[in-house]
Length: 252
Image (cartoon, rainbow, N blue to C red; front, side, top):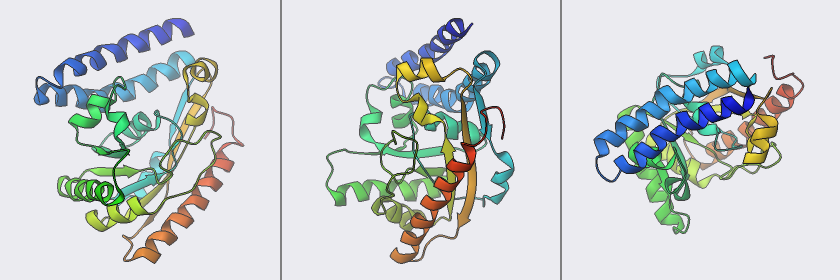
């Protein structure tokens, strides 16, 4: 059944992915329709199929979303590309927008055209610091005006061992400065075991992904407050990961 399930998933993903590759250069309106389908419909369905046939559990701690204000920034640890659909499912009632390297905006099936069409924040890898910060600043103003939820991974890259790495402050400070939004800290876990295709085949069955809101901070007023939020957030997230890893995948 697992092989059949994976074939079905590949088929489900391939149709919108290929369609968007052809639609993006021709019609931004059609590409937006496909992209919204991917983020709003396809992502939740994929997790439902995985749970039914692969016993892969998604634990979104929905009760913690009561902590969230009307508009906010999310900062979270980062483990894999699956973090993107995980947050799309967890915050399915909102439009989420990610801060990512521009390499994700090219040649990544299902993801690249969606990120570009929906105007996520794609930072050029070789950009100078001032140029990168201008991209983040424009993004922060845009999501605030559109009531969208920006999601930033302060580590800047995916962890390999599942533990929380260094949180970098420059992009975070520029994002809160330009958006003037409170900061919600989230923890997620499960993606580091799905880093590549071989691990997906080995770890997907009876695996799980968890995501939870841990704390909400007021928008920091200065550099020191921003740095304090990052330092506390890293500790909060790591502590949550250690608690989760004491649990079997089928339990909260």
